[in-house]
Image 1: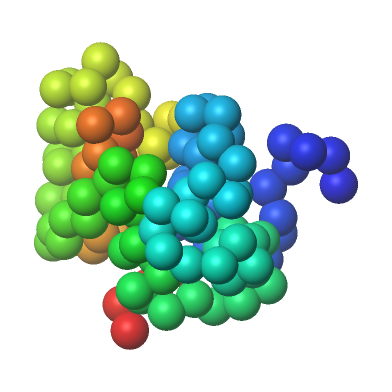
Image 2: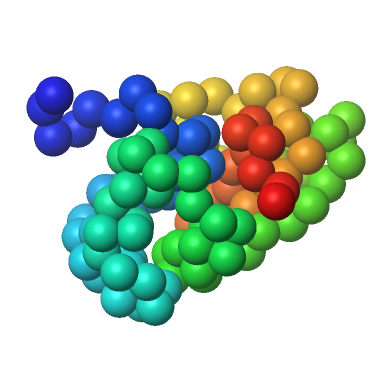
Length: 124
């Protein structure tokens, strides 16, 4: 696998976190340290080798300057569009090379630099 490939087992939210981390030229160690988790735990979550706890996901989001926002599924696309309109069209999904899905799921994260919808069933 080349260095820009996204691991197959990674959940969609962690795919987007990985894309955002790379776009900001941060190392996994940087995010893990700021999140207060081990690099190994972050690596396993980002690569899809583990199903991380919600606290790990939230800590990684915070370390990357993201705020997790819950929105009804039918409004998630509108929430993402609003964030993009206030952020020069940039979303974490667009940084990951994806278009925002029109039927985006119930979670959106709104950072200073992007947003994303989570379709992985994170919520435990």
